Image (cartoon, rainbow, N blue to C red):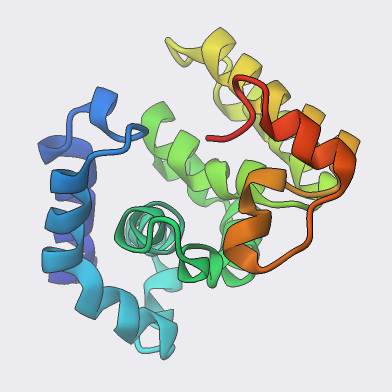
Amino acid sequence: MISERAQLILDFWFKETPSEMRFKKNDELDQKIRNNFSNDYELACQNEYDDWQDNPMSCLALVILFDQFSRNMFRNDKKAFAQDHKTRLIVNDAVYSGYLEAMNENQRFFMLLPLIHSEEISDHEMAYYLLNKYLREHEGYNKIKKFWQDHTKVIRLFHRYPHRNQILGRESTDEEIEFLKGSGSSW
């Protein structure tokens, strides 16, 4: 059984939010997510929603809350990345628990996306394995693969995402500064 709040998150993300809006900066969408889900985010950060990990769909809602909604609610703030480590652990547990089998391809994509958001190359390597296993039939497979390859190239080059440096208070190297001047250097 999925909780009402988890279902609201899934409905908002998969039914109410057009797919083309999910990866674009949009102040109105960011505010709507803050208004509707910031309390859920805070409760989840306090481990109040840990039981959501016991069900594939509520687990997906938790991942969306931590990985997608955090980036909307806290755009240009280090809090956007505060739950990334925990989210990766949740994703790993979900994969090993067979949760991806209970999801459609679009849901699987969002369950796996935290692995690409990670700055750990091992997460990227796992993401490609899972991409080929679970998203091979996704209508956007080639686009997803290219998008992920662009991310992995940056991790291989810098071992982190340079566009996060300022937000996270990290000093950029000369090479990162030069990279950030180019197009497609941040997402």
